[in-house]
Length: 356
Image (tube, rainbow, N blue to C red):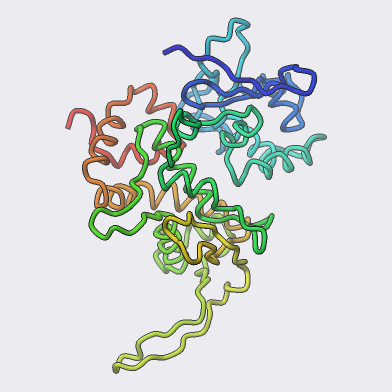
């Protein structure tokens, strides 16, 4: 495949070191740009990348955030005639996370933390798209007016509210799971259907993920308790529920108090496309303090994607999912290894092997 690079340029027309690859949208930074981004020296970043590349995939002493890339040449494949080392976006994000949270104190620590916060909600790839001006082909203007899929309509308007917007310091399930569905489109050429063929309701997977995440946070299961202890320093259940009516066991209802963690969350107005919500398309939904972001990502990657994703989509779109699954199981071994540690990589072991 022929790959070309779309650069970000400053006001003087000079390339800044941020690039997006055509036609697939995979992005990255030069080593020097990444060094500036995390507040480290260029030589330090080069040494870190070389150390990751030269490490054994299984037995290594790399930081947790960088272990998935052990033994891999961390270089974006392009047609760049200058031969610059452009570091793929997912690696950039892991490096930024390492310097923000795991690296010992160094002169640029504040820069690393500020930069990581800037990309935490949208993901590195979308962040670089915003700098290079790249627009995925499916979102580009057509020769004739054409409404995008419901999925992309949602992307466009979800956070457009100005009365009660998503606040800094909080995250929402929608933005986080969007990264996974973006990977699903890139590697399986699959975009989730607009509506459920059986119920004709618009498909909103983030609601399903949010409900299961909250159930899991309240679980007394030993695995859930261990993860809470590891990531939150306490194995106590987390309860974000509002006041609610429950059955009293005799046909009546009893008012249950709100969960003891309810006051930690903030509601924001999530905007839905008018095609699905013609009367009121601003729906108040939960956002969670950023301190719960690591445990949500753990849940998404280790629980929902491998255990629930396939069933959720295949029940609504069995034909489309079958085709997507076929593409994923046929990925080369080298690609599967490279995707280890990504959201789509956590789905691959849950699928049948190509020899099945």
